[in-house]
Amino acid sequence: MTRPLVVAGSRLFTGRALHPTASAVALRDGVVVAVGSLPEARAAAGTDAEVVDVPGGLVGPGFIDAHVHPTQGGGERLGCDLTDATDAEDTLMRVRAYADAHPGDEWIVGGGWHMDHFDHGLPRAEALERAVPGRKVYLVNADHHGAWVSPAALRAAGIDARRQDPSDGHIDRDVSGAPSGTLQEGAMELLADLLPAPTLADSIAALEEAQRYLMGFGVTGWQDAIIGAYSGAHDPTDAYLTAVEEGRLSALVTGALWLERGLRRETVDDVVAALVAARERIGDRRGPAGARFRATSVKIMLDGVPESRTAAMKAPYLDEHGSPTDVTGPTHFAPAVLDAVAPALAAAGFQLHVHAIGDRAVAEALHAITLANAVADPASLRHHLAHLQQVDLDDLPLLARSGAAANLQALWAARSRQMVDLNLPLVGARRFDEQYAFAAMAAAGVPLAMGSDWPVSTPDPWQAIHVAVNRVEPGEAEPPLGTGQELTLQQALAAYTSGSARVAHHDEAGVLEVGRRADVAVADRDPFSQPVEALHEVRNAVTVSAGRVVHAR
Image (cartoon, rainbow, N blue to C red):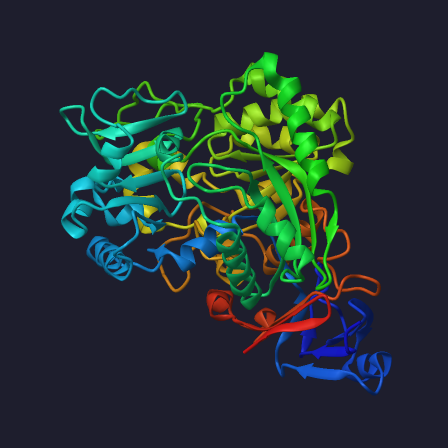
């Protein structure tokens, strides 16, 4: 039971559209009991209700992040966090400061460094040696598809010029063939067994820090994109279960169980059975603070990222002279294996959550989803493809017919320094300008959801919404990325609320209407009455989770 609450502003967004007259909601016992004017909400809530009023603000549903990694993000904030570093020198200074503050730690572990701060996006091991001599260092980059390691870490893992690349990744090397200091994709796993394992208390602390941080931005629910151990990140299952049961979590959470690479057709049945067992162990957990945790999705990371030429493309990447190479990027699951496991997972009742960045990965994912749709109702399972950076526009009709949602990470759809310096030379001007075809997807009838992929990028929805609407980085004035691929503000807001609720199976949330869960985010101004170029200036003023105020500026 919670005290009745009225939340008010100047206008109200329902999760689908602006309400024609309402500006307030009444909340009681964790649900919405009225949507209307402030006097109407007061009357519905009762005389004992608390009133939170943000003059001039926009009242809306709590945001739902459809693709996020909370324990990784929270852990990085509590560890060697390089997210806010401004350049290579600042990055190394932060590593040095963290090492000095933790002299007894065998390993320095953290992440968030930015590829565009280093030549060709590849920092070298000797730079870490100069900064922290003799220390073992493992630092995941901001996109979490690569890691920067020190010479001591390479030696500890036995990685030298003779060490072969794993099948699902590669070791970056200098001209002599010796490891240069970065590991891509599956090569990150070469150090996984050496890294210090967080205790359960550490993992819960990371999750609580993530929840605090996310709710500060108005995010009241999410889909955790990886439940399982992956590239040095540890399985957060026990942290979630404990946090829910002890009332330390109040968010709605759906987890995507990790489908390990190296799958073979003959092991599909065993792997699916193990995932079913993991789902059953988690169950449908509900906690005293309003939390709900389920793991009804399976994460399939099909490819990597263009900057390291690991996104799977239909056409080859370009060399430094702009000529085609023989590299199109790998997929982590062969098409025959993907076509076998996708329907098996769907038949077992799993939603497919597919990481697909390159256009070939998208096409292969759609073929597999079509097979999955033949064995289980897609409207019930709600499959979705995350990222969708490079999509062949000829594949959009199939994407729409499949019923799969486009899970957009909109903050990336701009001419950022990393995109221009590291992506453009590899894909060429035409493909570069065709990236993140948001408006084309919407026009084709593809359902839209949004997520941040934090800690890859900020979890602040307003920064992502700014880019979705402007196709320009927040506060910048460069030409927009793409031609006519902007979303309207209403489309972007709906994607980050009701659209993400649909994808995350949060059917009780994402919309402000009577009977829905009392999750509310109030912006400090009305973005619909301001220039779209100023959307990045919008700040979250108040967050209500399950009827309780959990953040107020």
